[in-house]
Amino acid sequence: MHILAVLDPFVHLLYAVVAPLARHVPAAALVVALTLLTRLALHPLMRRPGLLTALAQAPVFATIYRLFTTPVIAGQQNLLLDQSLLGVPMSGHLLVVGVPGIFVLGVVLALIVAVAWLTVLDTRTHLPELALPAGQPPEVAAVAERMRRVTPYLSLGSVLFAAFMPLAAMLYLLTSSTWSLLERRHLRAAAAL
Image (cartoon, helix red, strand yellow):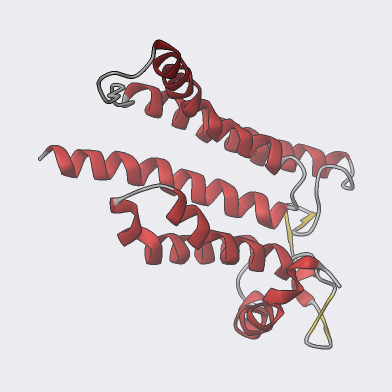
C-alpha cells in the first residue's frame, strides 16, 4: 500500500471532476487551475505566512501528485496519464523521459529555479532586523543571525525536490511558488499603504 493511499478518497473525487474536463482542456492547464484555486482559497492564511500555509497545501499537492502517478483510480484506467505537455507525459520525470522530454522538463525546472532565486532576492531585501530579548548570550545572537542570513535560501530546496517530481507536480510547484512570490509582494505593498 502506498503511503499516499490515505488520500485516495480525495483522489477519486478529484479524478471524477478532472477526468471529464481533461477531454477538452489540457491536463497542464488543469494543474495550473487547481493550483491557483488552492492558493486563492488559502489566501486569507497568508496574512500570517508560515508553516500553516505549507501544511494546508500539503494534502492538495499530495493529491495532485497521486492523481498523475496512479495508473488505476477507482478501478478505472487513469486517463490523465495519457495527457502530455509538448509530448512529455504529465507523469514523466527527468529520470525516465527521452531527449525531447528532458528539454521540456529542463525548461520547467529552469523556471522553478528563476522563481526560487527571485524569492531569495525578495526575502533578503525584506528580511526584518534581528530583535533578541536583552541579556542573551553572544552565542545565541550569533546563531540567530546565521539563521536569519540562511533563511532566504531555503526556497532553493524546492529546486532539488522538483528535479525528481513528475511534470504535473513540477507545474504545481512552479505555479504555487510564483503565486507565493507575487502574493508576498502584494501583501507588503498593501501593508505599506
